[in-house]
Length: 108
Image 1 (tube, one colour):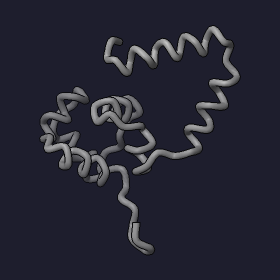
Image 2 (cartoon, rainbow, N blue to C red):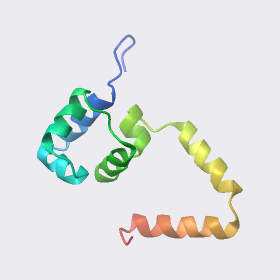
Image 3 (cartoon, rainbow, N blue to C red):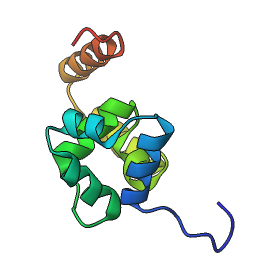
Image 4 (tube, rainbow, N blue to C red):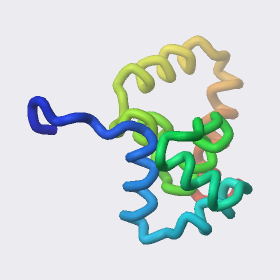
């Protein structure tokens, strides 16, 4: 980003991701289970995006919520995940790794 250049906000990133993916507002509305007018309001900043909608959008675009909200992956989130993961029992860590493996393969 150029010094002094304004960082796009969430509603602008939502619009940009949709347009870059060549997807219509109607298609995004269907993914989110809302109507097209709600998508228009989200992209214009007149409507807040719920946590559930952020999750659905990040899964749809195959990006992290950090990328969607902040425009980039943040090291803090990776560090926080690692810190929490390390505190889990070996059994819980194994279960999470199992889930991640199957999610990567689109089995779950």
